[in-house]
Image 1 (tube, rainbow, N blue to C red):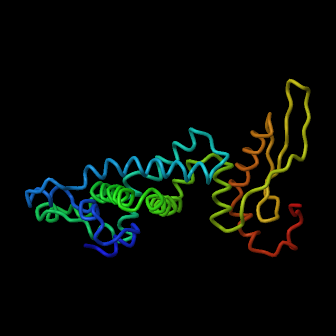
Image 2 (cartoon, rainbow, N blue to C red):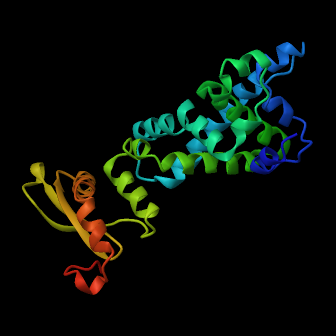
Length: 240
C-alpha cells in the first residue's frame, strides 16, 4: 500500500485501516467487497471537527463562538480538504473502480474530500488522537493560507492571524484616550505590530475600540506592510 500516505498520516504501511481509508465504494463493488471508506469518512468528519475546534480555540483566543463556527466551516469544507488531498498526493492513491475512474471521479472534489476524512479516521484508529491532531493541524494550516478563510474572522483575530503569518507576532493594544459621562463612555485604542503603532479606533467599550482599531489596521494593511519592511528607526511612533 502507499508508503506516501502512510508517512503523511504517521502510521505504518500495514496499518489496519489504511487500505480501507483509500478504498472508494466503486472499487469495493467491482470486487464484491463490503469494505470501503464510507464508515471511516463518517468517523473522520467528527475527528476533524473536534481537532479543528481545539486548534481554533487555541489560535484565536479573542474570537467568539459565532466567528469560530464560521471559520471552522470554511477551513474544513470539501473544497479545502480536496485541495489538500491533491497537494499532498493523497488523491493519487485513492482506489477507484474502472468505471468510476473512466468517468473522471479521480478528480472529484467529494471523492477526494471523503478519502481525506477517512484517512484522518485511520490515523485516529491506528495511531491515536495525537497523530490525528497532527494531520488535522496540517490541513488547517494549509486552509488558513486561503484569504477567504481569514476573512471569516473578526477584525482582531484576522489581524492576529496576519501578524503570525508574516512572522511579527501578536498585536498589542493600548488605550490612548477616554471620556464622556458615565452613561456614554467612549474609549480610543491604538494597535501595534512589530513595535510599530498601526492605527487607532474608538468605541463605547475598550473591546469595541480594539475591534475598530484592528479593522482600521486591516484597511491600511498595504501601507504598513511596506513600512514594516523598513528599519524601525525610520518610523516615528514605536510601541513601548
